[in-house]
Image (cartoon, rainbow, N blue to C red; front, top):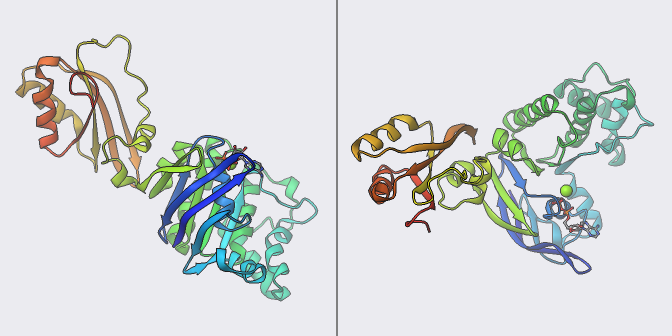
Length: 328
Ligand SMILES: Nc1ncnc2c1ncn2[C@@H]1O[C@H](COP(=O)(O)OP(=O)(O)O)[C@@H](O)[C@H]1O
Ligand SMILES: [Mg+2]
């Protein structure tokens, strides 16, 4: 488990991380998402204490990193493997040499080092490329070397900062697949820092949304999509603004379905039972947190809106009013 308690970090006048408290459970793929400049990378550097916070505590697997001296911190940091967007590999070394690097630094004997590097390269699908130079590899392969290197010291947490942001969509998908496997098969906690909601959608169990250095929302995605007013959910279902053509007097609602509820029969039934014409303004179905979830945007004529909303809510559906009398 990673636990941040009231952690802050400033750079001069800029408060990059502002009183963040966050618990990241072990064994999850956990996304830290937010726009560029939100403070995600600073948060990542505070988790492994590459950077010390100005205040607050960082606890990883029951060890308070913020209380350690530099020597103990170096040892504790081995629990956290780090993968970077720009790979940060050494061109002067072979693929295997890069993976062995972390083990050389901590004095692991040569034979053990080589065996471990080979295992890690096998794991990431590059077992046959150990003798290659870094420049001979594609971006996706280089990222796999970065992951193998991060795993070599046998960490419990893999921390990835925008590791797929420089990759094309297909390569991104294959790297995310690798993270999924590392989490499922090795049981590692994977902390994914990203500005891409699609990354969160496709592999994260939980996520935290960061804005202006603050965590404004966090939780299991299956819970988040049941939470009224969730900003994370709005970003998971990018339905956009209400179309101009919509009747300005009508009520516009978003209905969020979780866990594979079929939405069409519900909408058809409501239209029939209340004898109203509802118009479909948008709909998206996504795989989120391992389950199917959907969001449907409907325009409902004002006189029937209150009864329709009550009916849908009575069935346990999350209904949010975007426009109309009941909007709040
Ligand atoms: N080493 C640094 N020195 C000065 N300002 C920094 C430094 N690192 C980050 N910042 C500032 O802190 C804020 C958050 O940056 P960062 O954590 O990199 O955000 P993100 O990763 O979400 O894009 C930004 O305003 C950025 O300019
Ligand atoms: Mg960043």
